[in-house]
Length: 287
View 1: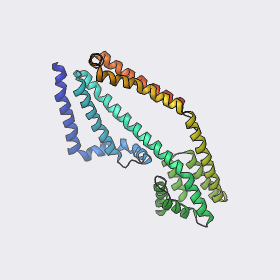
View 2: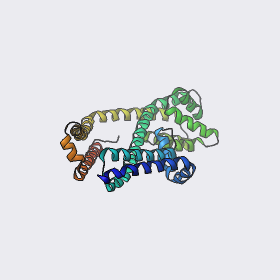
View 3: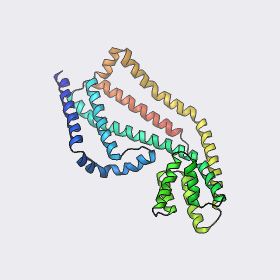
View 4: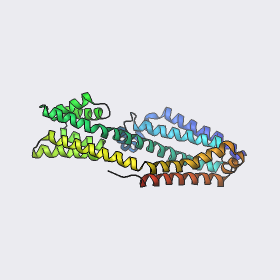
């Protein structure tokens, strides 16, 4: 019992130390972690998350401390399990943040790809009316919503400071990687060297994107049952665990009050996550 209660002041000391370091030495901390967070800045921009990578890193650290403190105060583990739980909480928070960024990136990229067909048709109309490529992009910026408006506007801003439009489009493709953008950038670069009807090429590309989107929707409809089964199979053990915690105190104490029970819960949750990953991978078909 004494060992269980001694962890509480330790939690307070660690949380206070993290808070003091963050307040007193914030500039030094930012300078230290910047080399490690720079690769994640591009992922945040791709996901459309308006925050700095350094701030996100500190939030992950603070969230890990809060999660660890909640675990300690609710589960009352012994000192050794409490210290082992600290890196586990950090890994869980880091993985959860990465998954959240990945989901946001996928949602934004899907929305962008759905808008790309209309943007190409606007550019085609502008080119046929006698506009240049850059002026056709201005039409897209003025007529289309985000995220495609912001990305095309970024291309225009880069060309305004001296970057060639082809290099700006290559950077565009790196920020929003997809087969459609790759076809667009390659088509524009090839036509700039060989000549040809750019408006007709963009119209054909827009029609290709339309057909790809149609096939993609059909595939998602055909695999909806497999994806729903995966979610149900993953959620069912978690619902049972929550039911036991809420309405079965004896089973709850056996599961959460002993080391073997906690390891069993962690193992079961890990297997649920693995099953969800396998089901999702089996139902994913790239078009």
